[in-house]
Image (cartoon, rainbow, N blue to C red; front, side, top):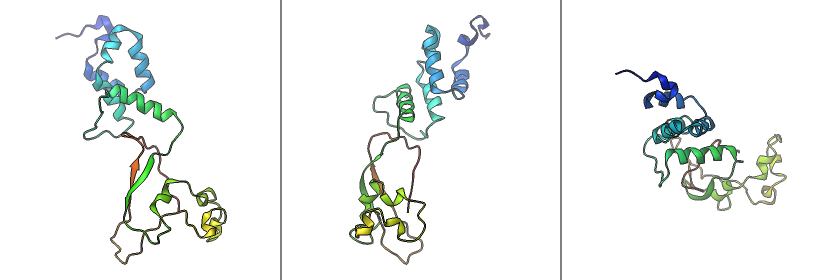
Length: 172
């Protein structure tokens, strides 16, 4: 079996393209797919878009695409990476516990004014500019326990079927 070298890149096997797309950016894949009919055919292989996408997000296991091809999902991811960040949590589905009634888990869904003043070091001074000063906590606090092995948790409802989390901030 001899390779057709007269076509250069056009004669590469799909397995070689898998290695190539693992090292190029999404926009370069799009450009290659648009440059000629043969590349459009090559880049119609959903496997190549999956390889490129795996480099950017964790897609191990079964990913429900709900009718999307990996190229379409790659386009969605690329769009999400370029737009301003947004609140991904829509609501609270559950929590391990609550210390006091007013220290509700829902408080984690909004930015606390306390977090806006991280340079204020003295205890309680950080609460001067928020509702905490008026006795209305802007935080969630779990109930105390003597069990050192216990875990505190919140279960969040996400805003969409597929959410791309690029950072997570936890503030006291």
